[in-house]
Amino acid sequence: MEPNYSEYSIAELEDALANIDKDEFPERAARIEGELISRQASQNSSLNTANKEFEPNEQFFKCPTCEKKIGFLSKTANKWGKVKACPHCNSLFEQTLSLKVFAIAIIPALIIHLFILRPLVVAFGLHGAISTGILSGTLLILSMRFKKVRNKTFT
Image 1 (cartoon, rainbow, N blue to C red):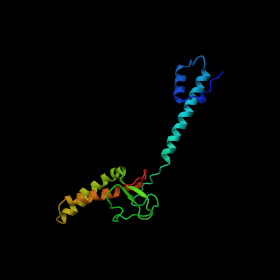
Image 2: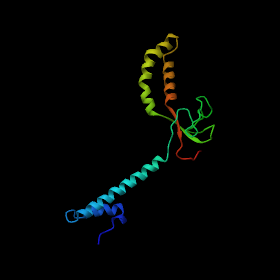
Image 3: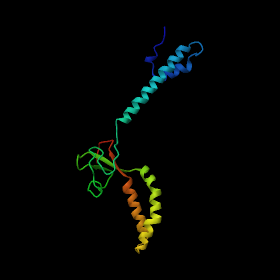
């Protein structure tokens, strides 16, 4: 009588594979390995579908749900806190900083700062630190993103 490996748990399959005599029962070992591979593939696909169900829809000054523009100087964009509500559709979104965009923009911004912005500010008779503030604010604005909230609780 052949064992029914489809009724075994993953731990039981791993135990059976570790303890089977592969020389005496090569087809059983192959069936166990095949069952383990199919179980692991289905387990990985179920984890991937759970992660794919949530789409953050990261946007630059747009609501991630309705995709309508949210102005930079609007009340919504300038409220305190990370979680905010869209003024158009009233859905919740998070305000985050995209480190990828920040990292990409930092080198060109520093070059512009050193060779264009700072000499221009100093030529107007202002302190050079003002150009650093302008650069920092511009980088923060460019790297700001709105994305959907995974957990709908809002405090």
